[in-house]
Length: 181
Image 1 (cartoon, rainbow, N blue to C red):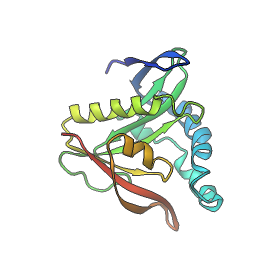
Image 2: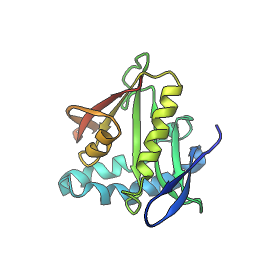
Image 3: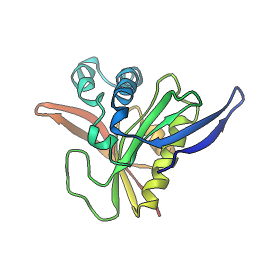
């Protein structure tokens, strides 16, 4: 898959961003993105007691996702990774696949680059790629923080869920979905 480039323009800057599929070689950079951004982005919406147990588990890139061909990074002109995320047919936690149904996986924007169109550009790409693969619907388990973002991207909230991370450790989230037709 060839990288896809596009422009983001606002009052202050014009920038070319590139979206490309990740490989296993991106493990360290995606881990670093998750480790620096999740704590900063989530602290306003989660109790410290939740974050102290959840962050070590959710702030790790999954090698299988990175090499799936459906997980991406978005980079600036200098090659700095500003965001990551993708989709899979398999649900988080290994639930069975359903025909035409996919799952948004680990979408995050660097906390220093929020509100600049990076996340929106990445999600537009993710949705387009999922639709191109024949999916009719995407679901996600949104953090409490990201619910407004996903809603702005066309997802509807289905209700609160407790995402199991390990035995005895759950993470509060919101189940959301979007039709791709």
